[in-house]
Image 1 (cartoon, rainbow, N blue to C red):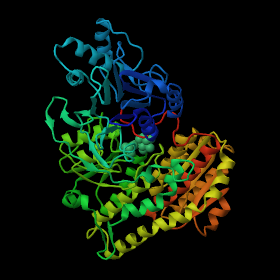
Image 2: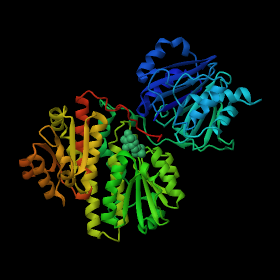
Image 3: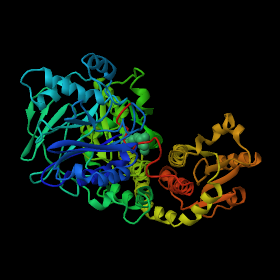
Image 4: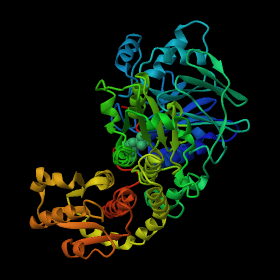
Length: 614
Ligand code: G6P
């Protein structure tokens, strides 16, 4: 969702804030703004990208010069359209308090009515603006309180979620940050401190960070900072070291982050498996689940909860765990689970999957599962994220920072994590030693095969050129490749805005077949596995209605070559591992179609990388 940055120290704040906002722009890009203090409080903000804001700051350089304290925001609109007046920071009436906010203030309407009675006039349609007036109101009306108390009192009256930063001309040496539901990190430097929604903007300046926990507030000064709960219980902050490098969050010569992240996958796959696959012991070793291994193996049921692409990985997890470990698995959208009074038993294990570890629905679903007595495992990419910290146990996917809004490498990393989990759960139970060796060896060979697929890039560009103007796409797959069909369709619609649907191939005749004509490209995943023959029949059915078939098939498949209009030939692997390869050409196809249509693939319209609001 929105991106937040803050700075207090000895350097000029405005350029630092702008630089930080660029790193966070993937979280929202409807509008952007900064507020800096240099004797007085100056705000520059407008609709549009950080690059536009940069121009505005350049033109108004005199107003931001010599400031060493400031806050910045890049917005993903929830309440109020993307416009100059709804852009953050928001100011109080006298213009001496500035606030940026990520999250949703659920009781904003009631607070707005109350504040209006006291004469406050609202300049925006946002829920966030109520906060700055509320702080102002309490600061003026409760005798002897300071800035910190005014913020704290305000937060006690607020329902909803927030990651926020606030500064005031009345106390120019304090920067106040608070979090409930929306992540915030403090970067600890020498006589300087940074605040950000995630660690990406900090890494150039410091590796030392403090992750604020839910319900925590920080008062940051040049000479140090204090962390306390919003109920004012102070405690020692835990400083941790960042575990990624600057290059990982830069484009490294690629035109887009998404392309870089697609091509990075062979390395990411190796990173996820590193130190975890023990060929000499013929097993997978997952340190994070060691103490909970029995709990998992003896679970009555495993429930997988996630959203978006992570939910697709979860579906593959269901197939894997049921096939290998023979434990019943159910997969649910986190957003449905949290509102449907679900049955969760003490012997159930809930696995939550989330790249960011911050998705609001996934987090809420996980908390409900915990409350109902389930043991919760987290599969997350972002180290130190809320889900990672609140789960009983878990594993990191080690895909590195993913900046492209449409998830690619995080997905393959999640699938590898689930393959390894399924194999570990079936060790000495349902898989023989020989089968285990076969799977481990084949898994280790997947990154090399991925590399071969990336060599087909030019071929995929020509297919993209041929179909870039199609208005609809259908994606078909069966078994392990049904979730891949869903993921391929999701990738295409996310970044190219072409309507696309994924379907289990056999279901085609229960509806989507009615849509097929000569204008309908149909992507068919037909690799050599137990459903191959059935897929051939589905291709015949599509052809018979004039549909254009683009098949993802294995090398040496003459039958498909005869049937399909276009074939993307990929190396063979075991059926259960095939999603790791079949998804790659689909990611590339979506990418090329979108770029050929002139879409901004790294920042698709209306989407955000991390959905920290409902
Ligand atoms: C957003 C992103 C998707 C992502 C989903 C779940 O919709 O745009 O790429 O799959 O959130 O995010 P998570 O971080 O929980 O995996």
